[in-house]
Length: 191
Image (tube, rainbow, N blue to C red; front, side):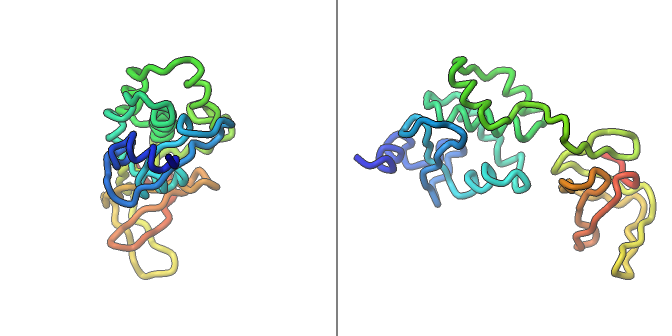
């Protein structure tokens, strides 16, 4: 029996992380030397894209991990643990506190470097020094002229679902009046 057929049978033809039934394929857990069913899971296109690209992570999509983290299959537990560590929200920390993994499986999960504090990591802070995370909402504390346009982003404007600049800790990106703009963090306050 092929690996994909075994995965289909094991998962009931559903994504083993979110339960989606469309656009499914096998996903090999990275940073693990072993091969075979133990290190592969059946996942949907959305989960695979977000597991491979940290910038595309939608934290609300991963609330499904509340159920899938209890899977009996090692590959599913490993990816659930890794994604919970990548999101870094209060609810993910709560789930990580409840999650149980055998020591050898936890070591495999940690092989990707998730869950470790990176001392070289850029930390974005608002005007009050509060740490900003990808997907947060902020409010402008000052009227801002938008370079390259005649638009002025008004004080008090809410900017939802911000993105962090991975090269400069003073820049974030967000949508204001339908236009994607770069904002300096000293002019925003986290809501």
